[in-house]
Image 1 (cartoon, rainbow, N blue to C red):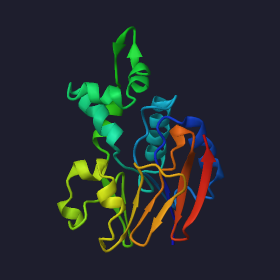
Image 2 (tube, one colour):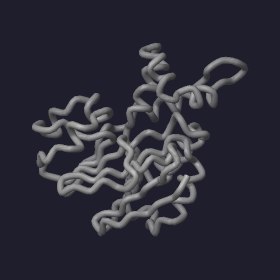
Image 3 (tube, rainbow, N blue to C red):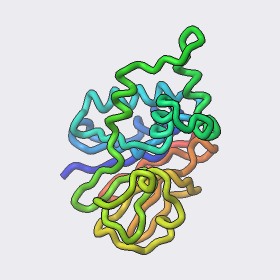
Image 4 (cartoon, rainbow, N blue to C red):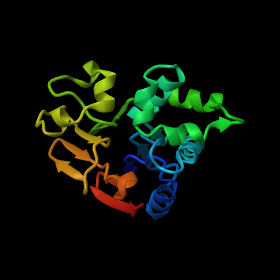
Length: 210
């Protein structure tokens, strides 16, 4: 059976991503690699991180699954002229700067298409992978997109059983958050913490400082 590797928020930390991928005993083309969103904003190399993820998805389309994060969602809204100040307040300036050409914002069509095609969650027989979490009391089919991308405390401190263990990121912890019904793997790379990869079903962790 193939293993599943899940990686939390990268936020433009290219160096950490490259070194973490080198550490993983991942069998490319056999094992699954799931990115839990938030590739851009705040960190120094958001565009390059996005391009690395896109290249991996193109190379291993059935085995690399990048999910939508709230920062990708806000970036798309910015491009539509919606809530632009909110995006800037959440670290979007560095991403926008890397898409400036001759003083104008230019985001290649293939990048926009890729972002628009990112799914908000991925489900297997035993796990649900999602960026932020799930609203307690509701099955996966009834979840709102905003909750999948933004929810925090109501999800994190709930003991609700969705029938599968939920693997999430979005909310940073100093070490992975382990509970019977969920595992959080955002360990605050862009804030001076580490970039974390979780290996399932073994429950092994790999870390790369930023």
